[in-house]
Image (cartoon, rainbow over all chains, first blue to last red; front, side, top):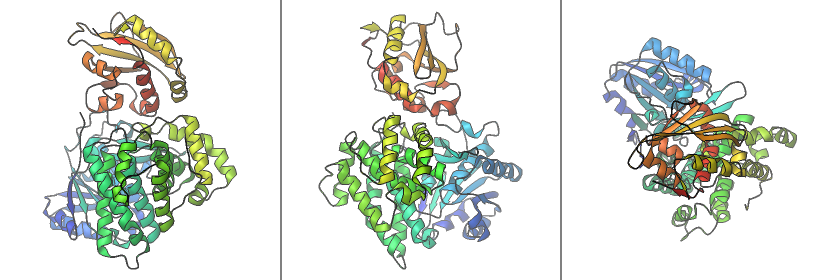
Length: 386
Length: 134
């Protein structure tokens, strides 16, 4: 017995206009400071206003959003009493919207209650709508929210089916202005979601179908999106939909140690999420390939071969893609740190990866020693064979 | 073969768990005791509570309680007998089991979510016990 959970999805050019048709009295838009200062949320606010809604903006979301920001957003929501919460932006803004929505709905809960094994019963006060402006995080279609805890920056990997949005609005208008570096990082995140979910112990026919389609699209279109000048709108739209499909794939099957390692590195050295999970994706494949061979071998035909022979083979295809789009292949390239800093923090990196909920459904259960060996391999850029 | 649930079974579980290096590694910082409540169903006419004191990768104590009320613990993991049988036979994942309502967990959720690897090793160990089901 298992579930497949998805928001209702509106997609394509002009999709944002759909918001005008949703009867809404008060809408709270949650976005980051950059989008707030540029008033980039205006197309969203305009449609909501057409529906008759009063609109308020919480534009305080920072990269790696912190519990304190959730609390500020919840305070505003309780004062404003919206019947719609809109996450507008990248993963941080949409994750923040989920957390604010949940704790606005349930004042009796804390952020730590947002786990899959607690009954939440959300949706009594408001609807949750997600409008992504990047193509990678997949947060618009998933049940997960990553919130940073304490001064040490540990990432809380929270998730619940009730955190899946009522509507995801995928309008290619918004990712159209992404710079090449952000396009590469977010695209790498989406590819990591797809491949990690396909190799997951919890993968299922629904998640597999979406994951394989996302891998196909990302391999074909990501280099064009990073190098294009200008980037054709159809390329942007393909990747925007692929990111949402990858979100649906991993949202229903989970990610694995690639994300556990990436979250650890990102939280300790403050490296963008897509860059870290992209760095560890080839290691995830090499480590898990034999345990997930029948699933991962299905990627052969979409990568131009009848089957994939080995983890090294598939990881090599990902590394070649990374070379095409300028993604980091080693920790020093990704994190700009010295070997001394790395060695000093290695025990903490291992401990954080070890305690990540992302290992729940990994095809193999890694030991602490194996996690350390993968970190060391990623420092030098060497493939692994254990 | 040992009957599940029984004092003999939980003692074997303790012994095997304390020999499992992978569990010891995954649970090396874990502190917290458990009650595994097997709810009456079908061939099991009354509920049975099994207690385990888990500390820093080892099981310090394990016993079958005379009743579920005999002892309290930091965590209670409970479900009907038939689902326990599937869990031990590895037909149900322990985490998915909770997410689909086949098992319930009482206790500090955030803490336990950081030890999912230990939970998997716990079930892997239970599945190695030659078990006879009534």
